[in-house]
Amino acid sequence: MTTTTKNTKLLAWVEEMANLCNPDKVQWCDGSKAEYDAMIKIMVDAGAAIPLGKRPNSYLFRSDPSDVARVEDRTYIATRNQEDAGPTNNWIDPVKLKTIMRDLYKGCMRGRTLYVIPFSMGPVGSPISKIGVELSDSPYVVVNMHIMTRVGDKVLKALGENGAFVPCMHSVGAPLEPGQKDSRWPCAPIEKKYIAHFPEENLIWSFGSGYGGNALLGKKCLALRIASPMARREGWMAEHMLILRLTNPQGKRFHIAAAFPSACGKTNLAMLQPSIAGWKCECIGDDIAWMKTGADGRLYAINPEAGFFGVCPGTSYKSNPMAMESIKANAIFTNCVLTDDGDIWWEDMDVECKHGIDWKGNEWSPDRKDAEGKPVKGAHPNARFTAPARQCPVICPDWEDPAGVPIDIFVFGGRRSKLVPLVSEAYNWDHGVYMGATAASEATAAALDAKKAIRRDPMAMLPFCGYHIGDYWQHWLNMGDKLGAKAPKIFYTNWFRKSGDGKWLWPGFGENCRVLKWMCERVEGKVGAVETPVGYVPKPGDLDVSGLKVSEAEMAELLHIDVEGWKSEVPEIEEYLSTAGARLPLRMKTQLAELKKRIGL
Ligand code: GTP
Ligand code: SPV
Ligand code: MN
Image (tube, rainbow, N blue to C red):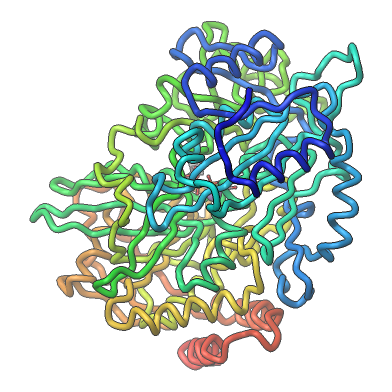
């Protein structure tokens, strides 16, 4: 298939990459339903996609067991000066990396089709949106990009003859010899995988993986790792944040953006169904927020994505009914159980599955044990659904407003079974930035190689900030200076505190609206709080717990400030902040010093 585009830069780049990768053919994607259906048919015929009898137009994929999540050890930020990538990124010299990767790309698409996928992050034509073009040899990537971004001719039209785009190069890295049968999920071994970013030239090169953030290059690669340094240069923000609108019983709207690390509750909070009467919640985005100051001096956010790439395990009609409604049809599932009646299943879906085929393709039942006698999970812990955002019953009518929504509240958080209270409010902007910068969380399955039990994950951007983390914190401080009194208020939450016997202390999910309600009432100055060493925390009675089955003792534990525990964290926090070296903002040092004073160190 040919193209009508006259963008010379794009045409030249496609030709250069096709010459390097040597595909059998080149196909320009138009974003149509016919194209989506044709891609699916190719994959169904090849045995890579399994149609789900129970869900209209929905398909199950099983990845290679080695290719199930992001690979942080193989993710690179290539800048001329190593210092500019900072302590949180894997750095490699861009010239050296391109030499290595050009070698890998040479002939890597033999026997395959190169798909040209023009896409827009954000509504086509919005002043906040950015255009990317992904070249990929994976039809799985094509269909996922159709859902997750705006793809096709409309994007080429917006790009025009001279428009700028972010080139996003992708190959699964598995050329086919003549006559060779393709595998169900082609990919390259771990040591050949590279997820490479060249932020100084707004360029992405990915090789060897077909999964999620490694392969759908609009998401983490463009919208965060390339966009974050771009945002710093241009004075805006690209964050790993959900966006929601909360409307109180009086009809007053609050817009909240929340940054939790991967697999720590963004999708769930974004689609929250308030358990308290009169409050309404609508979803704008579940993973990424791009924010710019508006003419009125406030901060406006758009969701650059068009779909959800959400964690399956734990998603149920009890925990996240709106996600369940969003995936009833036209959805893609990766690494779930296939049930005997032609549906998908995963752990904690809150329905019974007596027998099926697990994510590795083996016979499965809930009582299955491995060689060591441990229960075998049916779905991979990072099994994911891909679904169009417009299918969410509580999608906000303004979710595609090119102007965005004005943010009132920022929330940071993480998964901490101890120490961190259910909620606290920052004393001021700098304190809030400090809270975000020192956010920490227990490891999840979203990355293959996040080994540490608890790791600092600043603003949930540890794997996604495409430049020096010290400069990033300074950028946050600068944004606060620019926004002044119009800056959002900053809070910190932890839904994951556990009791001594290992049970969640807080019911979470829909009940989290009680915490959001307190935040809104704090913004309005309607409700109280007590000053603690770590911020303002609700006093008994400030948080609406009416009708909730949480005892007073449990509430006290959830909001308890363990001063000794905080003292023992300080040396580690000090060491962590010092890794930013000379680029650690002075104002962060001041915040640490003030915390130390408050806890008596
Ligand atoms: P990414 O897509 O990786 O960025 O993750 P996410 O932040 O969107 O995480 P998601 O909302 O998908 O939640 C991940 C897991 O946390 C799921 O298994 C959820 O069931 C669980 N979870 C979400 N919210 C809560 C909560 O309030 N309490 C508890 N206990 N678990 C929760
Ligand atoms: C995350 O890991 O934060 C995700 C999933 O949202 S992925 O797209 O794989 O990065
Ligand atoms: Mn994410």
